[in-house]
Image (cartoon, rainbow, N blue to C red; front, side):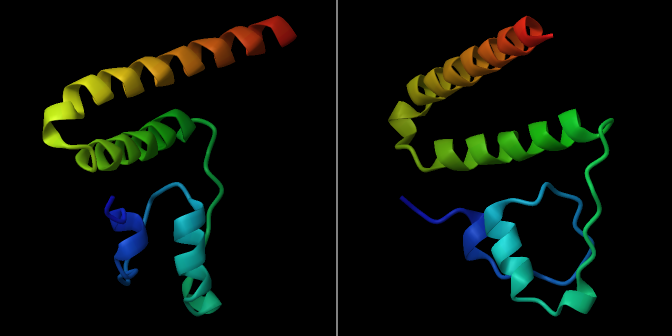
Length: 96
């Protein structure tokens, strides 16, 4: 399995608008703190930003799967993710 781009690439100077993952946090900790500005994720932007993060992670994970297995594994991943989201939503509605 290959390293993901988020872990293997050096952090290039510039403006980033992304969810702060543990891997990115580790990279930012190696940068001069005066050069790093973190902004809290706004509630209105959370669905879009988190969906983008998940999409990138799914693409990277499926790229690591042998090409002949990608469709089957992709469907399985999509089903597991969908099931988890439905379950999470059901739990939240029961609590309210």
